[in-house]
Length: 170
Image (cartoon, rainbow, N blue to C red; front, side):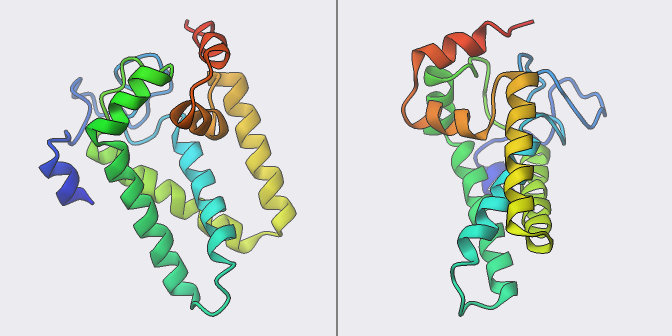
C-alpha cells in the first residue's frame, strides 16, 4: 500500500511539518494529514464490519480472515486516494478541501481498522453493534459526519445532508 500511495504522489505527512500526531478539525487542510483525525474512528468501524462479514466465511482460517481485512482496508486506502474518489468527495460531500490522505494517515487508518477487527473478535455481537452505534452518534454530534453519512454522500449525495453538515462549519 505504501509503495502504491507513494507512486500516486501522496505525501508522507502534513505540509505544515508540525509533529502533532492528531488533527481534530475536519474543516482544515490538516484533516487526513496527521496520524489520527475524527475519521480514524470510522476506520475502526470498518474493522467491526469486516469482522462480521468475514465471520460468515466459516471454513476460512482466522488468520486468513485477518489478512483479508487488512488487504481490503489497504485497498480502500489506495482507492480513497485515487483522483476519482478524491474528486467524488469534493463534488458530493462536505469535503471541499479534501486532497487525499497522507501516507502516515493511511497507515493509521489501516491500524484503526485492525483495532476494530480485534475488538469485534473479542466482544459479543451486541456489544460490537452498540459500540458501532455509539461511535456513529458521537461523530454525528461532534463533526456532523459519520461512516453511514460518508457512504451515503459518496454513493448518492443528498443535498439536505450536505446543507446540514455545512451548517456546522466553525
